[in-house]
Picture: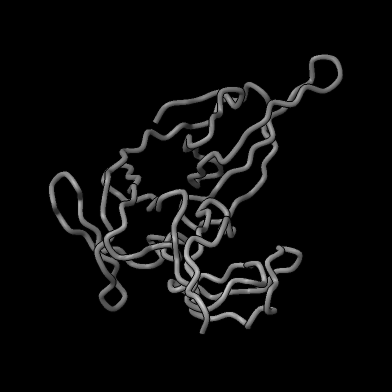
Length: 193
C-alpha cells in the first residue's frame, strides 16, 4: 500500500478512506480564493457498492491500494454461489452474492468480467461497461410511441429494474451502462406479440 496525493486521484484508482476501500469514479480539483483548494471526488464503495461524494483537502496524502486484475469468465449460479473461471489457469472459484455486490445484477453466463483482488481476496467483480439484457416484465407501451418523451420501469432477466422508453416491450434486448445502471438503447426488438 502506497500513498497518493488527493491532487493525483484518477478514475479507476482504489484508495482507502476511513478503513474502507473506494474506487475513484471522478475527481475535480477546485481552487477557491487566494490559494485555498480542495478536491471533490465521487467514490464507489468497493465492499458495499454505492457511490458517495467526498470533499478532500488538496495535497492530502491518502492510502493508495495496488489491485491485481484477473480476467475471469462468469460460468453459472448454483444455489447461493456464483462460479467464475480464471481465464489464464482455468481454476474455478465460487463467490456469494454479498462478495459480488451490485455486479450480480449484470451477470450472464459465459460473460467476461474483471476480478479485482487485494492480497488474494476478491475486492470486486467488474462486468463489462455495457451489457445486453432481455426485458422479462414491463407494462405495455403505447402503439406507435417511438419517442422517448416518457419512461416506464422494466425488469430485466437478471432481476435489474431500469427505466426504459415507452416503446420497449417484453422480449426486447436492451443495452445497459453498468456504471450507473442506465438504459442506453434497444439492441433487439422482439417484434409483435
